[in-house]
Image (cartoon, rainbow, N blue to C red):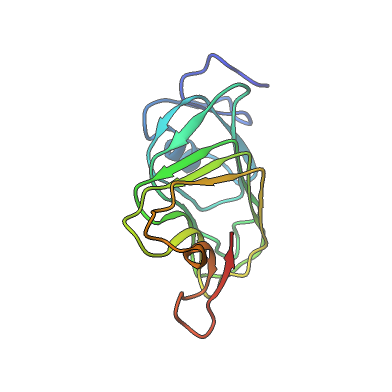
Length: 171
């Protein structure tokens, strides 16, 4: 069920709805693993995802998260999908994944990741050294990398930037 007139976020599995800038996080906190959250147009605060969820823009909606999205990729998380949700952060990381390993995957699709950092490496997606979850990024635009960042400073980082286990998938 797609609802275009909803203000905020709806859990399609429970029917619960949430509003305000913290609506996505409130919906995540009350959701069960495997639920789908539909997000309408609006501006939302930073979120932390710690369970298997699909977080998807409602039909015709253009939601934006205005800070880094944190993904806790612990052993029981499972698959996480972020679809149609733009992330516009003033930092240098749009999405961070914890260093706790685990099973499942992260998919980011149909989004714009915009970073307004202040120079240096722009870690579009940062996965910790221990994090080896499969990562899929498709139909996603990267914008706003600081003009001080060089081509080899914009990418997806796995591990520590300057450490022996760090690898950078440049964009």
